[in-house]
Length: 593
Image 1: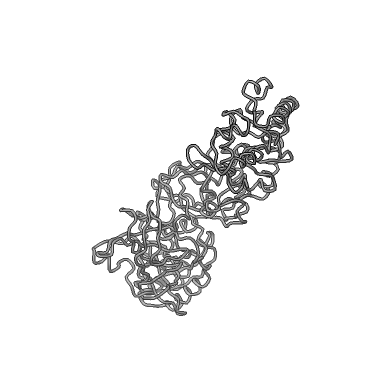
Image 2: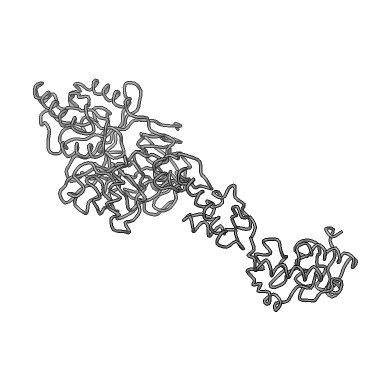
């Protein structure tokens, strides 16, 4: 069992009768439209696969897509995940309508790497073959493929095949290197069952690496990779780019073409996306089209926004990222009116008049190339995992937990928090601390952890944030009433004023709470106040009663009533000066001695 496989994958495209399969058979020695498993089971393959070893030793797999008009949707599934194409035109037939259709698909997908194989040179004279070559090159040059290398060959006689193999080597070495550490998204193009092994799915791995034992998300569940096969060889791992068959254990009961195997917790599914179009102007598009991405084909409602931008509402959600390339197909007119580049997989809904026009202006500035810093500026706050799942690189470290913040917005929030704290203190000097939840609401923050991070450098106490005013400032009338209570307690420390006396002085519970926060009074319970420090004084007096004492003994020693003694002793228990022995008695603690 080999350890790792690496290869290149090239799609074929061209008219059904122009010798694509013959050419692939000549290159590989394999029948591209029949595989052993399907031949045994009597199935007809939608996408054919064959492979060969290039002169330099590299492995090359062909996705031989159908050319018949009714199978254009299958052709889209085959071309979509691969980075390069071998475009086939027959020298004896020349450029055909289906050649134009396939080229339009490649152009809409933005495919930039390819070569031209002019086949059947043995059936046409040299002059005719050259005319077909030049005509095809002119068509191709006007698309995303641009200038490609042309090669004249005959799959039947073998003429020009060595030159074609060398050309394919040059093509594959020019391809950008795939990111083999990327998150996996394997679009499933075939599903079958192997007796004794269970479900096997196949697809083209465009990025990332799959290993035996991996758990991958699919269809709302998780499946374990039981085995991997590529080019009829078993592997412990397969890295992009590669054709791969994955034997799965577990997962949903039904996995179908158009599903995707995904790295868990790294992808968002989207059913509304904003896109840039390449092809027909957005206002001219039919409102109902089919979106093709990978091997998925999903009905989509098209809402034009600008000349080349639109919002797509999908019949079912798909795992998409910014920068993904897809196609819109019009099944009624058998054509592909536009290619698609995904600009946003989490667009805001339109909730006010003029929102669509404003969004069109915003989308006009987006390129579809993932820019993490720009997206963070646009969204201002976002979880790191969500930014990654949307397809963006992370531009900075989180400010709190998993939260990322645009630096400019973060500085603005910090200023606004300081202003909110000072405004609260000015409005209620008796209670100057701004509650953290009130701060979160005032700033419109989604998580209290963000408040704590913003409040760094400010006093944070008991869930409240303090600015310059770190203690309550008592109004003159409250201060006067508190001073009266303090004078009475100075004469009789443990004879707390009763409710009537407090009401007579105008001290409400809120005022008493403010006085306690200001350190002017010690609040023991509802309507029970002493002077700060008199709880320690009481503990010292009770220490003289012996090792244990009762409530009655404590009441007499302190010269107070049961109304005051009960909450005072409970307070002393909580602060560690006394401790209960049983239901009747308490004892002094080491803190008292």
